[in-house]
Image (cartoon, rainbow, N blue to C red; front, side, top):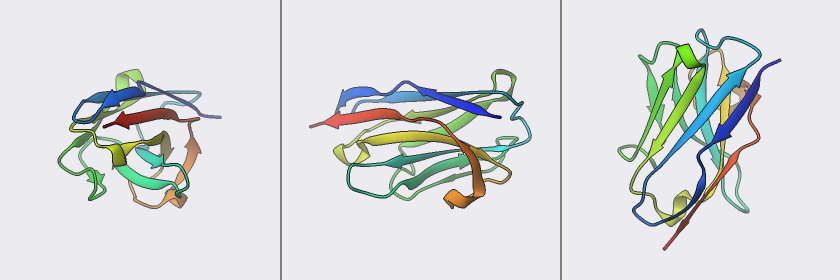
Length: 122
């Protein structure tokens, strides 16, 4: 069984930056894609970014492209989400996930973390 633990969330002001981390345990994930999704209050969970096993393929949602950067350190079994120019619309619980392929669809992923709250105040 894979456990994913996110950290790095918090309360920040508009325009600030945050870096989220997700550490995996229970299985080496260097052959798997890793992704980030988010869920705002009253909304469905949505795709944010994903990265394939090597880091050679990354995909972003249009809403975060150019502001967020996903990366991974396979030696540490960790994936990161560097978030810059944060806006109030980025307020959500951010979830880490892993699956066989880097994809936008939630169904492509098998394991999910518990999430970390990001709140952006104006």
